[in-house]
Image (cartoon, rainbow, N blue to C red):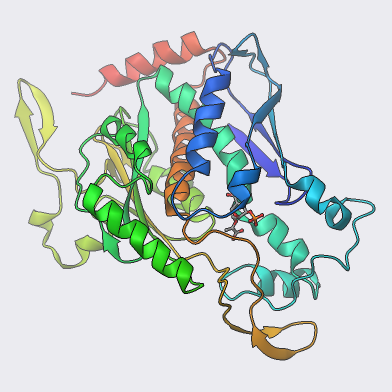
Length: 380
Ligand code: EPS
């Protein structure tokens, strides 16, 4: 599989083409709507989410609720576009409108302007914006459906916001469905309240907060990914794709950085026999050993930096006037960690679907399922 996305935050629409999806995969309107709503929710989101509906329009590659094997074209129209058309229309857009020259530290504004030769960050931030994640979630819907047909399920929950830690330790991905009913998608109710209070505090101070979330994929059989080349390693693929999610500063698998001080005897997941089958008593590896899935849950933790648009501003330089000033506030979110977790599920789904389809091939879903069952049966 492969995909490309295009579209600006305040342009007409976001679009994507996903290629390599087998024929015969059932996907419903509700599948798209549900995931879009999950991404748009979360305490700490800004005013934009009240304007948008993130309705995914399927332009190609599906008929009568099933994929045809042809490239899937998806579009999400930006409802905010009419308010921006004068500034962002591809031909008549007035470049003197909506200028941002007091670049925001932490955003792509400064480096993007230097790289592409602008003294107005509008052309950079429009594409760098996390608005792009709306279309990635729509792509993820297709991939999640592909995986669900094989019995693979992906969930996520928020574990830290602005230094407030949740105490919940998740064992399965399915139990994480409950996170959707919490305002910050945290499984620990008392921590959730404190997280919301922390977001309120940041909002009142004109500040922002980041945090951490966990993604779990369950049902991945042994043997997805490969040790034979760097680009075949499953953790390389997940790491790269997840690092490309706006604001993500670290991705770790299993114990991650907690390996640094523990001896090997306390890190590696000892193997035992139970009724003639190989079992583990821990999953510190997070389901990947040597770049290959080992049959345990795939457990990924990501740290998200605070959003770089601060209403209170940050010391910066106006790149047009070369003058010290405060960064220019734009409408933005105070905290987008709950939404980032939902996008990370979609990204994880894409990587797993891509690597599995590369391993199994298959033009049709019935072929894919048959080959998948054979793969599952390989495990001792
Ligand atoms: C987002 C849309 C954006 C921001 C946010 C994510 O809308 P606007 O810029 O019009 O308010 O709310 O983007 C950022 C935080 C960012 O830094 O770019 C969305 O659809 O998720």
